[in-house]
Amino acid sequence: MRKRIISVFLAGLLACYALAVTGCGQKDGGKGSLTVFSYGEYMDPDVLEQFTEETGIEIKYEEALTPEEMYAKYKSGAIEYDLLCSTDYMLQKFINEGELQEIDIDTLENGGNIGDRYWELATAFDPENQYTVPFFWGTLGILYDTSRVKEPVDSWDVLFNGEYAGEIIMQNSMRDTYMAALKYLGYSLNTNDENEIREAQELLVEQKPDVQAYLVDEARDEVVAGNAVMAVVYSGEAYLGRQYNENLEYVVPKEGSNVWLDAWGVTKYCEDMEAAQQFLDFLCREDMARKNFEYIYYSTPNEAVIEALSEEERADETLVPPEEATENCEVCLQAEPEINDLMNELWKELKAD
Image (cartoon, rainbow, N blue to C red):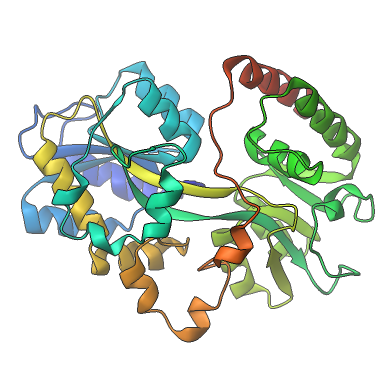
């Protein structure tokens, strides 16, 4: 996700760039400008600048920290965004609510750089590949310190067996934390069974005294610094963590996990579909996809970029998760409304002091 804390520097840079390009928070009536909505530090600023240089189309870049924040800002109607980049289950929500326009994928000259594997993953929330273009993807697993963990880690059990009390960081994300418990219990992360949700809640309540903190990107940093033994993190965060601490390893537990996919969509407010598709095609171009990949180091669905990686890089499962590592994984989808309400209620209870 779509999952980085916004740095003060980048936020300031992009804010200044946006103000120079368009009026604050206002559409430009489709006159050579696009307002795009994504996550902080999820796009190399050079890509935006080069797009404007090559096309003359100005970009106003707006940010959100989480999919839920993105949805709330979008639905507020304060800004009519032209394009947005979000994650699987939230894109499903946007599609189901009629917020996205169909994209003519066949007109994207660089669309063929996106591998079939990723278009197939996207069908979980966009069944006909009509509304979204894959951008980043990866897995959710456990980053752990091999110098402090007594045995090889291959199961979610290590988070719940009590052996590392006070040394565990869980994700500060309702869906991701419940996912770990549900998969450990042998259930689907997309279950709509109230009893299974409550069983996962019992497990997480029992685990809570062992949890040092519920964090997002800081989870990786705590393990890197040696302040925690293990953390539930995204594969891209695991890659970066291992660059700073050679004792760290990452595993997707054998019970399965979440394989996530972030993608771009064109909103119903966009009045210049031609410009929007130019932007999407530009992002699919190998050189631009490489820039974004090297900026964030999350797994890219752009096979032209993957093929240009070194043999060592392609063998790194945090950069290019192999198909066997995702066999028991699922794409996160929207829960039924009553189940989502239940999870929200239980999550608040879990996080309460």
